Amino acid sequence: MACGMVVEKERRVDLGKRGETHRMRICLRCIILIHKSYPRDYTTNITSAIISKLQRQLHLQPSHPLGILRTLIENHFSSFSHFSDVSPLVTPAKNFDDLSFPADHPGRSVTDSYYINKDLMLRTHTSAHEVETFAKGERQWLLTADVYRRDEIDASHYPVFHQMEGAAIFGADANSMKELEEKNAYLVNYLKSTNIIIEDVPHLSASNPVQSAHDPHHAETVAHNLKLSLNSLILALFGGRKDEPLRVRWIEAYFPFTSPSYEVEVFFNGKWLEILGSGVVLQSTLERANVPNSIGWAFGLGLERIAMILFGIPDIRLFWSEDPRFLSQFLPGKITNFKPYSRYPPCYKDLSFWLPENGLHENDFCDMVRDTAGDIVEDVQLIDSFTHPKTDRKSQCYRINYRSMDNSLSNDQANEIHAGVVSRLKESFGVEIR
Ligand code: PHE
Image 1 (cartoon, protein in one colour):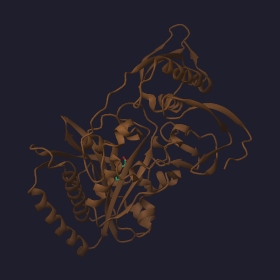
Image 2 (tube, rainbow, N blue to C red):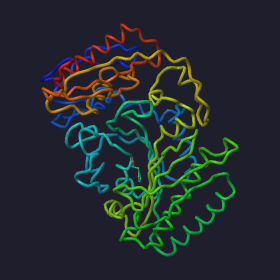
Image 3 (cartoon, rainbow, N blue to C red):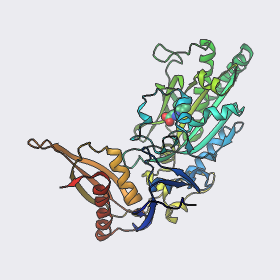
Image 4 (cartoon, protein in one colour):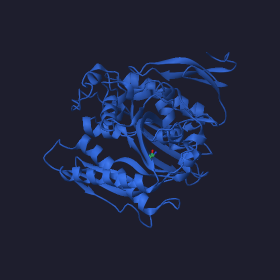
């Protein structure tokens, strides 16, 4: 499997359980992912913590909250094709260029996305599969997958999460559009009889324009169908749980690969929560997929966000737990309320250091912490930063909260893990600890 390990070094890596670490040999020339070897280059920034997540496929487990939610949504869109086993390794062309992202889009940078090398990355969204799925001739489909983004660490941000992409395309002709209008009229009627309050925005506006390739009337019909289809999904998922009506709001948005574009927020436990992005598919996407005379919509929704609300799961790390106290609570096809088991005490450690001359990106710091200490890290916060008035050197202080989901962490264990973080920080970024 390995490449002969021409150059190698040893690194402490977290095993995910009980805060244990062990030493692992790492080849500096290549990287092994899903049983295949890939060359490293100057862009390689994928960490072993991330590699360990590549084959978990939580969304395929029938009694995991993410698997349950996927199945509920697939059942709602029962006439659509369903895909849920697609490799996370994609080319940057697939993730960005095919979807008309500009060359200077920040999402492309190594501080925001995980690269295996300059030609291969981990998908940052399920939209990366739009062109290939349309190109297969699929006209109505759902695709569920794990997606990867470098991010800060807290209770609702994790560098791996799951999205579901949904899309539908229709003939761009008068007859097909007439049929779609009839479907829309039926859905309008259905939604009238339910307890859902929807705040809407115009389908088209100067700031959320129709594409020049589209007949505005067709674009309006398609956008209307998108909104009706998603409102009925939202109602199926969230509605009928309480006496009070469900409140949903549509907001104008911008994505490089849809126009007009919208986001949806749901009012839940006193707060507006963004749950999805959507819009009328850019005609150039359909042209790349070689689908002529068609017009359609797409959406991408975040499964963790919705599952946290529906199942009452307070911390995004819990989705990765292998503790039976978590996993045994859920049954296929059922939304049940998560009953928290005892939380173990947090353990805060502060880490102050002088920055190296070329600085240190917060995402690089967080990834290094997560890679060294694993899911023991609950959150990482920058609590202080200043520039020395005389030497002009910059100092930062991060506060790391170590807390185990599965067992109690002793101060000695936390100290040992923290010492691993400190030595990695010095070794990888050349900082000077204060
Ligand atoms: N891919 C977008 C995201 O991750 C969501 C999206 C999907 C928006 C499809 C429009 C259409 O934010």
